[in-house]
Length: 270
Image (cartoon, rainbow, N blue to C red; front, side, top):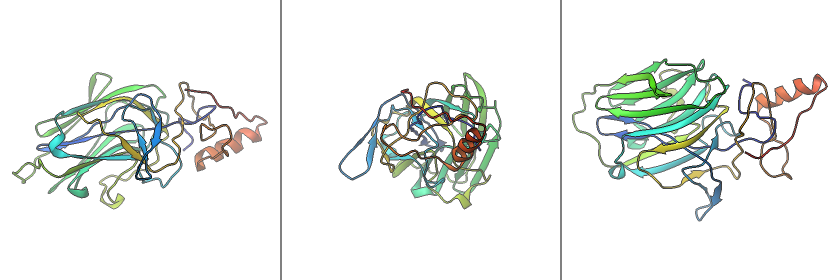
């Protein structure tokens, strides 16, 4: 995997969101462009309208950022965001209720959107729609309409997942957990296995009606760059004094480029 947001310069940041709504799990994500600020509990607070780079080095299944909301606060059933990658596989965003008993994951598999949902006695996965790993920004809309979770891509139908559970009572209390770039449940519960680390960016998101900040475990969030190309790579952080950090994918690319007599390592602002 050496695809993606490895721009000839710095790397990016990230974010996400999704939703569980009466009768079925709903999802959503979206962003635009601010930085993270450290606050009281030691976790870095990330504004919900930031642009986020999903491939930052960490435990590959661990989300980069996460947040929690009360289900009673959820009013919207539709979210939109823009997504860009050359990577064919990886986690985009995750959401759950009942502390992970019911969950939703949106990822890529061989370049195609993959949605997986687990709710009560039902588990469903579906893959399809247009390929998204072409390095272009795509607008995704995720909504919940009755028993259906719907993904639209660039204004056109993408995926539709229908679910019918024996559960008759809708869950309208408790908490909704949202995560970007990873999952909060066990990977053993997934219906379809995939490699979790996604070398891509999300931005310009509008998700549900939530406005609380997200929490990031990382000390710094890497940059997302305006222009990318397959096989490019970059330094990790935005500080000019930081030590270069590469993932396993970018290390391999760097050695290949150096072997050919070329070393491209510079930073450029977003």
